[in-house]
Image (tube, rainbow, N blue to C red; front, side, top):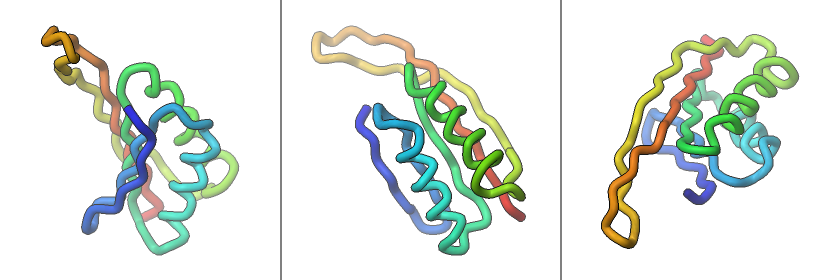
Amino acid sequence: MTAEEKTTGEENTIFVGNKAPMSYVLAVVTQFNSGSKEVNIKARGRAISRAVDTAEIVRNRFVSNAKVKDIKIGTESITNEEGRTSNVSSIEITLSTA
């Protein structure tokens, strides 16, 4: 999964991939500074720990009034090039300043 930053309408979502956690921290802080009250951090597979690190760094160092509003965990089925289906864990962390 590649690292992406997307803003879709009212939903501000940061997709965590293989970059360093500080890259995603910057994206989350930028969303909060541009007036967003909520930011979603999404990841799957091995990037889950990076997403948790991102949320904790934002809360502890940069946006002290940010709270973890919600955490959703799940499993996504992914089909690879060979046609095999594998299950991958996913997480969505919602941070809120409201």
